[in-house]
Length: 166
Length: 194
Image 1 (cartoon, rainbow over the protein chains, first blue to last red):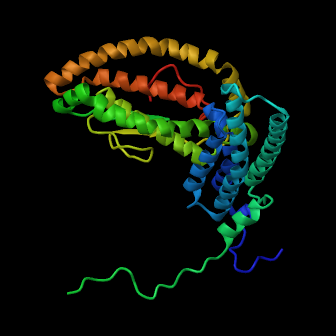
Image 2 (image 1 turned 45 degrees about the horizontal axis):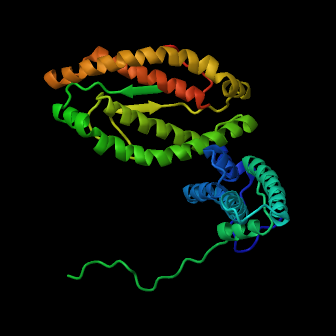
């Protein structure tokens, strides 16, 4: 396959070290962070993903791509999960709110979404651990564009730092 | 694993008194506060590593290095709290110290069988026997620590045999911790010798 113009070449598995593969895999496994802490708060997974991305953003493009994709993919599910947790808490606390068919439908939809996410998360973690690229729908191209696109450095006409005037 | 805490020729009486009376405010509290967050991260990495070892047979190297840095930080703080060395411990996992050192070799492969054995029966065959002995050793360590405190106050020297005993207790505990954290497959020895 041809390399895309204006993009850095995509690394091949044999060019990557085990450490890079492990680091890339770790990004997807951050979806289990809330389990590790023992709190059913979906935001913990997102926070862990953001921290992990920031730790690894100076790492190689392969690691950066996977950790960025993992972080982006956490966003919508975190919002949906947070709504569900908030809704459930409201039902538990308030006398005016009761579980209804809408809540049941929403929770069921979310259960399926979470299972799908976990399955895809594990597939991507395994691929990353083998040094393979794996593109999610929507998030994959965004992450690729951000990490692999060759950005033109802004040409600075006037230097910012100058020697002292004597 | 190599864990060393330097035995100084002489100890500062001023620092000893400062640590004893205000150590909680200027040393333990700020370190514990930051360490809390770093330990949460460490717990997340440890949990994820467990699964990584189960599926790949390897502890992710970056995660491993972070855990070693946390152990180093904990050792340099413990060494000061127990008056084993002078000086203020460096903050953060990346901090360095010339009086304490911890080296842990990165294991290329870890056994999945041992991983499962440890997860299900670690409490029985690791924690129970080691904690039993370490409990009594710690009581003796506390008594020695009290005696050494006076020795440092009056002579400015920490008795070497007492210092060695304290370091060996810390080393022993660190080995158990290392084994239970899935960072090595070597069963911890029932002593604290190097």
